[in-house]
Image (cartoon, rainbow, N blue to C red; front, side, top):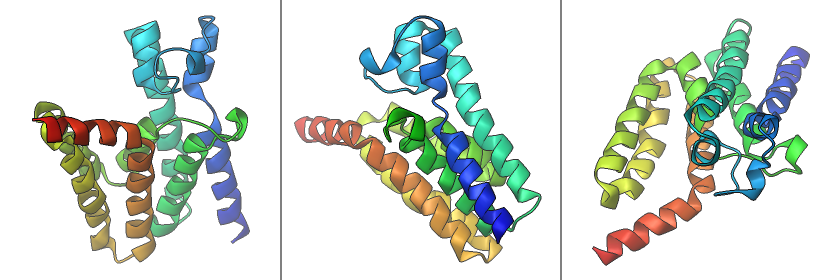
Length: 189
């Protein structure tokens, strides 16, 4: 139990590392004061270009992948997914940014890549469909809430399903402004 709690704390602290803020600072930019003011790779892309955005994406995805892969060596899938949930919470509510943070996209991609790559494939398909059919982007996010956790249901560990659900839910809640915009766009068309 002690080891599990230590992993949860390590995951939260690792998730809290603001990769986008660090990369942007190396270029002399406070990423929280430009563009969307978000620390994620999208805002870094818009303000600093592809190379810097790729560094942020790889950094956020990589740290999640490494922690979750390492945790999977010691814990059940359910416990590992809970550790992944701690990573997401760290990304969204960073200790190093006064409990503000990113939107959890790259971090969740790293978690799903490490635990259930098929879930990552479903997430990618839903994202592409959302981009192609903008008026359905809200539904693609809602679909992810149900489809991604379902991928974990075959393992017989309810905590894995619940953790996957909350990872997706927290990520969608951080995209609340985007969802409001999509709803307005859908009503306008």
